[in-house]
Each structure stands twice: as structure tokens, then as C-alpha cells.
Image (cartoon, rainbow, N blue to C red; front, top):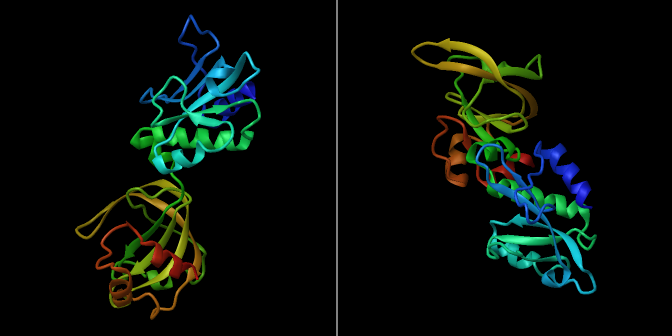
Amino acid sequence: MRQSIYDYIKKKYKVSPEFPWRKYPANAVFRHDDNRKWFALIMDVEGDKVGVSGADYVDVINLKVDDMFFRDMIIQEDGIIPAYHMNKMHWITVLLDGTVPEEQVKDLIGMSFMATASAKKKEKHRPPKEWIIPSNPKYFDIVHAFDHVDEINWKQGAGIKKGDTVFMYVGAPVSAVLYQCKVMETDIPYEHGNKYITIKALMKIRLQKRYPADRFTFEVLKSEYGIYAVRGPRGIPNSLSAALKK
């Protein structure tokens, strides 16, 4: 499994192992390319030091866990223990002898990768997010934008990336969420500016769902979901997300 994990990390995260210790030439460190923090350490250690009797040496991987509740839960599983030779409050040791399924090991590597990543990299690798974005019918006929096409270009909001979902709130006199769209492409070059709006990049969005103009009105957003203004891209509460997906 050790070689399989090497190959996986190189393919998935574009990171090759480093072997920094002359005394322990088989011990491999995997680092982020920007902040140089470790996200994985693969070692061969004496079996009795990691609870494996009858084995001289076993391969293990050390991984970081930020969520203490998850850490306390997962170290109850076979093949996962508080970290050997590292901070036991924030790192775990996972056996690479088959006790822990390889797919689970890969999931834990992903968790460690995100726990140690820079803010910029976390944003790049974050899962898809949901946003409400404003649109002003005074400047663009958004009410009829999807009458004949399923995709349009729209001003790209800060933080929005490909794969995200945007719910388009149409301003007065409509004052309601009318569309659910998926972001298909971002960072489309575009320069436009006047006294009302400045646009530096566009995103391509695809229509997925329409809403009646009287369903998610501003009054409903305010009274039921605590949204008092939609002046720019913003996240949405789970309760509103669930209602919009019904």
C-alpha cells in the first residue's frame, strides 16, 4: 500500500516525497508547495510501538486532524491511533498494512491536506458553495435573460468559482429570487465601468431552476431566513438552501 499511496499523492496533489533524514532513509515527507507545511509523513516503525505485535516493522502514515471530536472518534477504529512521534492532539497514525481500507486512507489524506493548506489553497480546493447574488433589472433585463437560452455571462463575484451554485435575486420592482444557476466557467476577461457598476471579469452560468416571483420575495427572505440585504454575493443559511432545493 505504501507505493500505492505515493502514486496517489503524486497524481492527486502533484507532490513528490522528500526524504530529509539520513538516519531514516525510508521516511518520506509530503509538503505543500507554497507554505511548506507537512500534510503527510510515511514511515516504517517498529510494530510494538504502534500496537502491532509479531511484526518487526510496519508502514504507517501520520496525518493531521483539526476536528478534535472527529479525532477522538476515529482513533477508536482498528488501525488508527494517536500519532506516533508527533503531536497526539492534532495528528493521527494510520497503519498501511490493510487494516484501514485504502480508500479511507485517501480520504484522511485529503482531510490532512486541507487542514495544513494555506488560505489561498483552501479556497482553491474548497467544495462547491451556494450564493445569493444581486441583479438589477434597471440595468439589465434579467427577468427575460433565460427566455431563449440556458446560459448567460454575468458579473463574477468575489470568491465564486466554477461548480458553485448561484441563486439570482432580482431587485425592485421584482424583489425576489427568480433563478438557480450553476457556475460553468469563471475568470472570463471583461472590462466595463460606469458610474453604476464596474466589471473586471465574467462568469458563465447555466439555468437549473426557476422560482415564482411570489415565492422567495424580499419579505420572505427577511422574515423567515434573516436576510436583510442582497448588495453583493453572499452565502445562504442551511434552512434557505433546503427550501430553494425543494
